[in-house]
Image (spheres, rainbow, N blue to C red):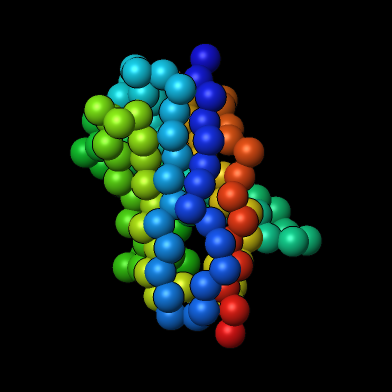
Length: 119
């Protein structure tokens, strides 16, 4: 089992940047595929980005391609989401998720961090 804690959210103007962090409780975090999801008020949770166990593969939702970048630092048990050129529609609670065996469903979830982009 792994506990995930997100940080780095906040209020930013449109066009600005934020970097979200996901810290894991286990030193074997490298064994987990990790993803970021987000949920805006009144909307369903949606996939944002994912990174494979080795970090060799990354995946992005079309809405964030070219603006967001996911990366992992396994010695620090952390995964990051660099968000650039933020838009008001990026406003949501962002969640980190991890799984040992699949990149399609995720077993472990953090509590979320709020990102608000003002126009």
